[in-house]
Image 1 (cartoon, rainbow, N blue to C red):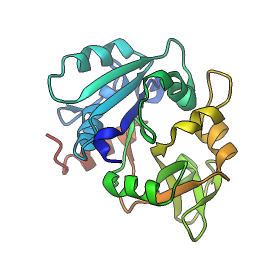
Image 2: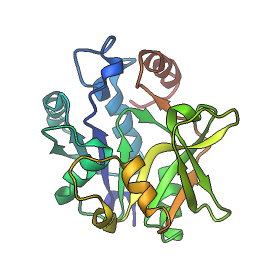
Image 3: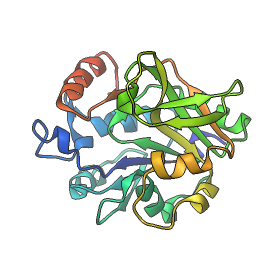
Image 4: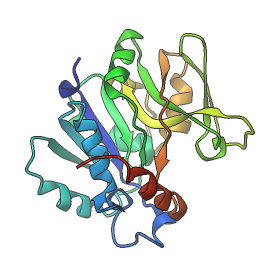
Length: 238
């Protein structure tokens, strides 16, 4: 399957409480990165690989996101899945199920960036006949992200919670390919976490890790936001 036939869900509903002291007038995904909203960087990243149908899973200050992207005139189709109360990363995807047309579909966190090769990621998912594939990255900050354990075939064997670790770990980069049947394994409740309530339950069923050499950049705190502006200033997205 080519990227132009794969839906992209971007999770942009978080409240961004830690960032409000420096970005209080807009939702976190619209935080300015050298004159460009962070979410624009994510969208230009995926469209650069040929993805054309994007579902924004909105929540906190979602009207600002809708207002901004409804004015777009390019050839990208942007839809909105709106949550009226916080649903968590898993609940946000479940809430968008009726809009999803493709299997697999791509999911991305709306507050982090990892420049993995998405064309290779799609090929990896298909070759592994995976149900779930996750982009992974190397980091020495396991306490911030949690880590993933792989076997020799790149099958994921364990998810570990966020705990201090002296060694470099392989961490979840917040980019996923999921087959449509993953919806059937989601909890019945509306609000839940992908990382803590879904992934550990399906880890034994064709879950694979695609290891990228690119680091993760996120804007979750004022310090990381400033670092992101420095790091992303060297990349071209316009």
